Length: 143
Image (tube, rainbow, N blue to C red):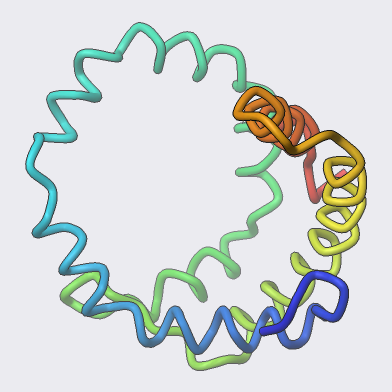
């Protein structure tokens, strides 16, 4: 796909589509490699889940309200009986391209800021990682 300086929404969307369509075997391999019950781990973290759900109620509601019934039917109608939907382009690729058009400038800005930070010691690397997290965690492509 290229480096961040040359990436475009179009090539990101095409790469995403290609990799998504090719990922079914990798998905199954990943599922089969899990050795701890993720449902048990999630149950043990239910307090954290509840806190995060309550904190994001407004965002959850507004996100759901952006999806019309016809969009929902269109997105869900292509799911196979096995639960695997393979987008062949069209609306899914258009949505990914639109998302990428918002994501790429944000990523470029974040990377520029992070590259200005020192990267010599493990603490520097930790600080860079946390800076990336801080800069991206508040980002909303819909605002």
